[in-house]
Image 1 (cartoon, rainbow, N blue to C red):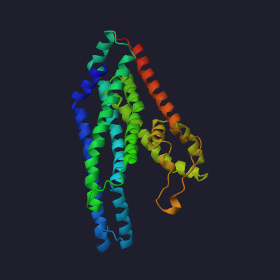
Image 2 (cartoon, rainbow, N blue to C red):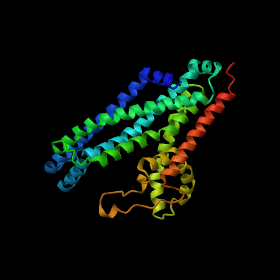
Image 3 (cartoon, rainbow, N blue to C red):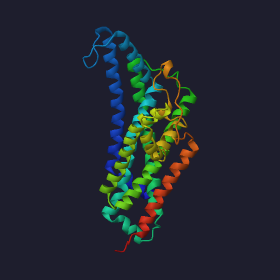
Image 4 (cartoon, rainbow, N blue to C red):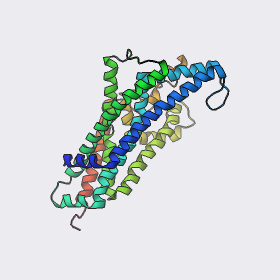
Length: 319
């Protein structure tokens, strides 16, 4: 079943369309940084920013230095992967909802179940195939990011410099990609469960993307609340007590802990200056244990697979 699912994924135009969009996003990000860098280099002599505003030479020089750091190979690859991971997650959710939802739209899922395919095998095979497809896409995107990163670096410093990338840095970057890939698992499982419950690709897309947008909104709220709580503010404490228990069990928080391997971005320094070097302590009930985060995501994955299986068992496939 897994091989058949992979074949269907590979034959979908949507699969290749989504991959092309992700590649274009990476290329465009490099072009945007180059344009911004050239604008601030010019602003050092003209005193005019990229939007026509006045910019002091000191600010323009500091901004150019920051952009050059971001456009170094190591800085750009890490920054670009954050963007690729964000949009890549949306892409795999869309693909999973379509892949599972169309089984109901076309009636092929019903045919398989009538022929005796175990109820658990159906969602499990889809999850395994989608996870394998996501892994292949992650490899393609990671390889494509390398020439983009080299081109971006040459725009900043005029030549290619690989000296900062030793074996340890390549290993760390590879581990980041693997952790990023594995954290897509509960999202894929949820999309499959949503498609099974909704019995159609359209409703499944609404549920899958809707849930991700809710998580995105929670991140925006949390960026304010968790900082205020860490600094001991009482102004938002009541709202924090409602939000925190919900967000801490979300896919997003555990994925963040795993991808940063115990160093969530919300507690990192807010600026590279000396005043911003102190990290903030995590307020209760947030955790930074990768092992606990793995268990949470495994629990969610098992729950959604069980939900999909239960939904199939309750369905009258002979109707």
